[in-house]
Image (cartoon, rainbow, N blue to C red; front, side, top):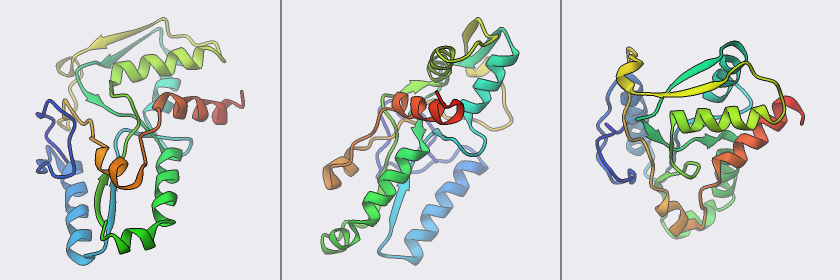
Length: 191
């Protein structure tokens, strides 16, 4: 929902500037909830991966079994976020609804894994961790630019979220995406 031109992480108060239909739909969802429910909690997340569904981790694992070289974009920055960690945060917030109501702490919050990385950095970590438990065909994870990997949808160069508001109001700090990755790979491979 942000255009990616900001150098620093995006805060909840930064203006939305969607680059495409996907970002626009996220922004319109936020706006609909805000318009209809004065008492709302919106948790914005980024680069979600998990055991279920299609996601970047599963794609990289599949390609690492099929190809000797992976070419991955290295000039887009974000924060991978494990779905299990998102679920934990949502459960924590749900359990504190009384406190949220009493303190009028309704609103939008950002939550994502840490630290920030690039798609290339994330892919390299996936391959490195997966190689500890299985033989992969991949030999090289090559860094490329966004221009080297054109897609129909424009992607922001920076989608890093600032999670300080969630930490300040609720003491909820970002989890390590590397730990989430290890948890996911253990669940997928049982080792």
